[in-house]
Image 1 (cartoon, helix red, strand yellow):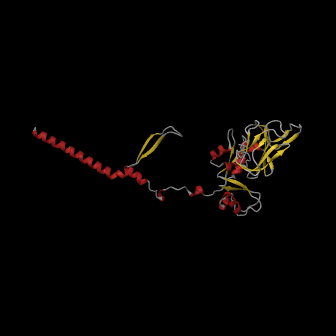
Image 2 (image 1 turned 135 degrees about the horizontal axis):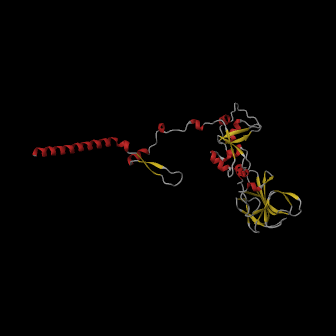
Image 3 (image 1 turned 45 degrees about the horizontal axis):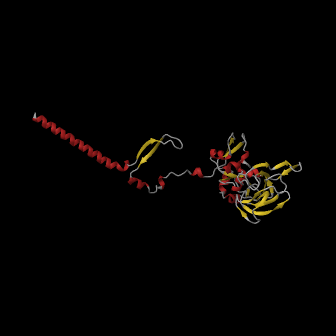
Length: 329
């Protein structure tokens, strides 16, 4: 009986020793592999805020290894964009038929292009007049069209748009530096002049006064003679004494009184634009002064040849009247 107890005790301690040895081996193995085990992937449900859902994969990084990761990544471990993605390529077109509710800004986002590109390649002069069923050309890269004129050279065109001459040659499949007048050249990466873009989008001027149009630009029957005549501006009805504001910043070129326009102000702007404001009750600016967009230049009245309090608003582009409505925000 004593012999049996002695053997059992020895076996018990022998098992304990073996377990201690195993734990020691596991601990040594863990310490040896610790540098490779400090980053652990885990998954948790994504918070349903923003786009999508699914699972979120994160990382738990030890403090020591996090500091190590702050050092710059060696260049040979960074995957660079393939050179073919950024090099110039030949111009190609697809087509798109305009659907109900679509506009240029939305289509630009859809096709990953600038608005300038879609406007230029489709020769759009007023984005507000985009028609359902209209077929648009969709290029495979951003850029604008340039209509070549006499004495244009590849170098002068590239300089004008700050573009690469070689990129222009590749896009248009040119085999010579000679440019033929009367042809459209696609200029990769170029954009429209901001004034031109605002003209096309109808965002160039603010309204000079709050009110509604009582007589638009174009032919009408004269309220005084009953004869058909051309109305070179638009009449905006407003309360007498309401502020009239400069539709765009510029310099006051003329103020005065006219038998038809009554008290009027003319402002000269950039890019060949001038605006005229008529029938004022009071003029609040002087010729030669500079005014900012929205600055008060006079008050609504009914001076001159007028049927009631309103503002006659005319826009000139290089000395020729244009429809103000197409340029107002």
